[in-house]
Length: 302
Image 1 (cartoon, one colour):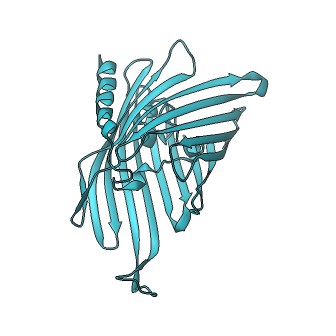
Image 2 (tube, rainbow, N blue to C red):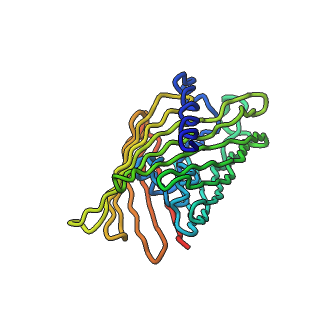
Image 3 (cartoon, rainbow, N blue to C red):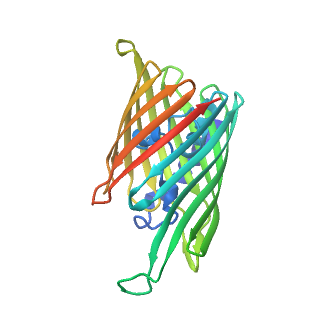
């Protein structure tokens, strides 16, 4: 009954997305930026993949699959000197898990103008962050559920906006097909926020995904296939896909593809495991002369 009720709740919450608002009209766009170089390299298709600290962002239900304690850090170099940081940790106690994370985006030395002047009259900065606490629980041997609560903060120059949001997630593993899982999540549910006198909606995202991991004995490794469908409240639906080959639980190659975006599609990545530490890198080229982005992650299993 718990499983049916939660999945039904998530599906009902997805219905408003069928009448999506104007593309890009929601605020706090940094909440759409994924965390972890591995998920980014896999094309942001991570709703049905769990077992590490990045599950706090992608689907809190995935935290139950963490063994013991998992800690992670990420640094992202974006175009136009935009930087994005992530730090988090998950502690699992068998049938339940707790997590906490902090993400932040910042830009410095933006030119201030009050008209079409050749020289700026000063400079200002932008700083956004979200502090998240998450909880997940195993409801049956195959079904996990999770929830997270976020404190949101945006500062542009001397102006501030604050708010709260909630994520819901569920994950199901098929007992008859080892390695196959599906996931659902709803991100950034919350009331409108206001900046100065302007009110805006949060960037709600409704996600459904599937993942299948299978050993490949001839290649001495494992292959992961993953895919997501994403329906934002301020744009058209998107589809994301990713493939990973991991050799002997040591080195991984990854590629991803995003459909429905105007300025990005492919992504690539590498990963390595050394004595309980995970080192990951993701490269995502952007078009329209925006430039390229690079993500670096460190993970520690304690």
